[in-house]
Image 1 (cartoon, rainbow, N blue to C red):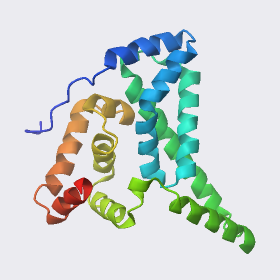
Image 2 (image 1 turned 135 degrees about the vertical axis):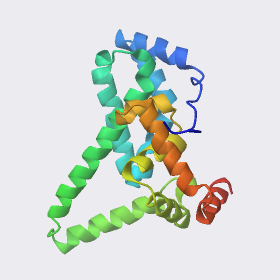
Image 3 (image 1 turned 45 degrees about the vertical axis):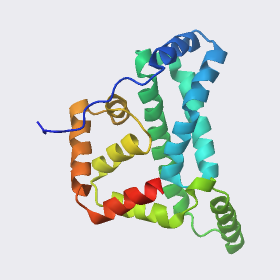
Image 4 (image 1 turned 90 degrees about the vertical axis):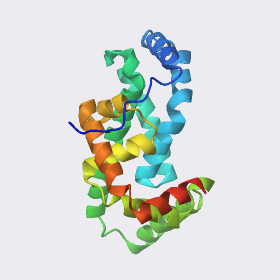
Amino acid sequence: MVENAPASPPEPEGSGEVKALVLAAIEDNRFAFQQLMDMHQEKIYRMIFFRVRSRLDAEDICQDVFIQAYKNLKRLKDPDRFTGWLFRIAANRIKDHYRKTKVRAIFSFLPDVERDTDAAAAAGERMDIMENLERRDFWDKVHTMLERLSRMEQQVFLLRFFDDLGIREISEVISKSESTVKTHLYRALKKFKDDKAFREFLREAVS
């Protein structure tokens, strides 16, 4: 067992309210589900956007996440786990997005005009990204730091510090035990503890 691993944070405020809204939504109360959307949409969008780096794609995926959640809500056995369940749906939709992107890449022989149009549209998207996410140099540093982590460490680190999920919620998203989540999170933090680049990264994050 890893000593000094980060402790599981307390239950978030409003968790009882989330449970009540989930139970109401399961009974086809659309207003309750809309409230759940309002409570979670910003975090879900932020999670998706950081991974796909396209505002339009992130909006589409985010919308699909809530559509899937609404359709499958009655399958959720434990309303207390709604948030983790929702993030797991988002993680799966992101995987689907990358699969589709790889398939589209196979057809890179599209006419030059169409390729140019797509490139222009993509450039327009990047110029229209949320104001606080436009610092390319900052995000380049973030990705450089993440490359030092294993795949599991990256996933846990992002979910904890960028998506603000608790240990239990992360375990639900990645289908691993809480002790496994703590171990990988501890390893990720340990790698950066005395690293000068990591300290610079933290200064960038709060500047």
